[in-house]
Length: 118
Image (cartoon, rainbow, N blue to C red; front, side):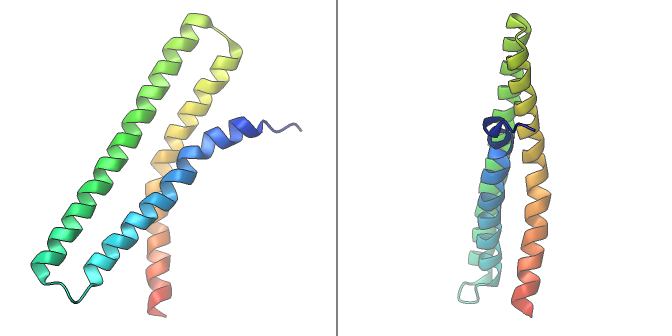
């Protein structure tokens, strides 16, 4: 079996990028929720700001991937090259991995908070 490492890395680049980044933002949200020095209104404002930034980041990444997939699809249809078809499949897999990253990060955050309680 020959592994195409470029294809494998490109398939999961967004997944490998999105999980730590989203996890970090969620940890900052958790810190904002548990920071007792801040008043309730300051804590709420901080949570809203981070939630807005996280949602905007997710929307931008998904939009970028959808545009990337559509661009590749048009390019592949024009040239009909089998190698380009493979890259189109890779871009679709990257989009799918981005959709998987957010629920996985929520699970990791839940485990992290449970470990903190113990």
